[in-house]
Image (cartoon, rainbow, N blue to C red):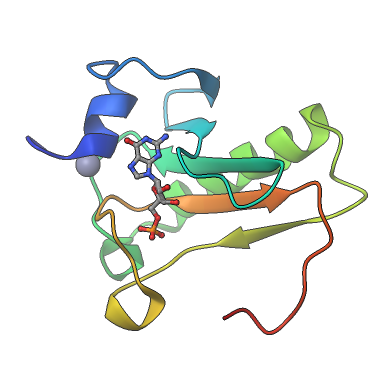
Length: 112
Ligand code: 5GP
Ligand code: ZN
């Protein structure tokens, strides 16, 4: 998708330190981290939001990448939060589906 910043990160047009990559998706550090570990896991294909995520396989592949990140970065047992913001009420700002993976600090609930 032209002009989509996360498509450009996924296809290498914008150089980014990738934390993980496979044929389905890419994980990279968030520009504005909300915790000591804050990554975004995105599909390589342009999907604007969960509303357009029609294939269970795609979400399965992305969450497998989340679990792998948790294992490799050693926070699978201490815990972490995954967040997908969708639309105005959730304040989604980038319209290429992304899973926030936030870890390595104590969090509270409910979220703001
Ligand atoms: P949203 O509010 O849509 O759920 O989250 C968008 C996230 O993308 C934000 O946490 C923001 O910091 C991050 N972000 C926006 N632009 C860039 C970028 O160019 N590079 C990286 N690494 N993260 C970005
Ligand atoms: Zn995109």
